[in-house]
Figure 1 (spheres, one colour):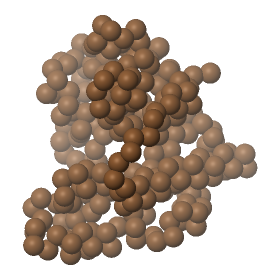
Figure 2 (figure 1 turned 90 degrees about the vertical axis):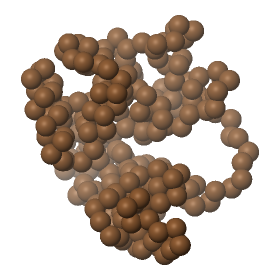
Figure 3 (figure 1 turned 90 degrees about the horizontal axis):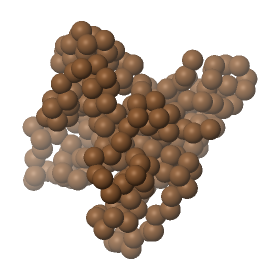
Length: 252
């Protein structure tokens, strides 16, 4: 039985815009492994590509505008937090027969994409030699371990009858950094890539100080009941290291 990605590809007849590939799966593997001669992409980039491809297809099925610039902006709103702009988009989508929350739950997480590539497609990727980035590797391993522990806890809760269909849920653990001065919150990888958490309150001269304050301001949020203790005990020896947001999409 296929995973969520397989189901979505078949349900919406998804294809790739490049003629040299026969299927979405072939394209995903080529981009992940870098076998097409380009730099290999990570789970996040592939998940975003797949989700936008799926969103475009959903729009086409409902005769909605699929201009790229609009699609990119609306994708960010759909995946983002509750805001006035998101509410406005929700109302606009409703006029075309689309529900923003249903779309949000339909889009796969990076962990689902990882499972699809490594387990469903059994794709393998050569480890490239590079300068060790232990900080990023530590956070990545924490996310992966948190995901595995959360899935284990969900299975246990389901077997005890405390969480219906818990073993079928997709777990998405996100690491985000918060600005100590305002409400800005960004993914860890994005902050590291650009060198700051918040552009408004970024001070190049006190870069290290701001990063330290931002790190200490993090907390463990939105973890479903029953997961918090297991995750903290198992992997987060320093609870101030990351903010892990675990979202379990449980099919009814």
